[in-house]
Image 1 (cartoon, rainbow, N blue to C red):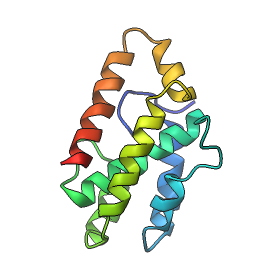
Image 2: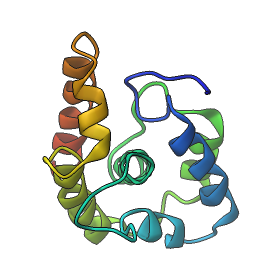
Image 3: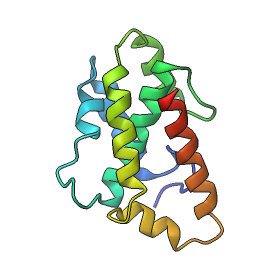
Image 4: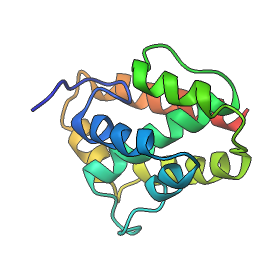
Length: 132
């Protein structure tokens, strides 16, 4: 098990997905991340990847949040001209899915009473930035 924390990239799912992002020269990794195979029940890893993609989209749309991994920042800096406006709308929809009852990631976080409010606050802050 890798590092685990409330921030978007403090888990294995998001870290692994960053490799895919780095291999892509367009928005294909972002689009794929926001379209998991199972839309009805969001698996934990899919949830982590959705949030990671949302964080990258937010960074391109506005500016990078604190604590982004260096490889993520490098990718953002070389792809900051991507048009992510429609992806931002999709990311908000998918964040709502991750925070819904049909989300394994939310269920797992809810079990941790100390950390859940911090995780939830971090996600809702990301959501509001995407919406601005």
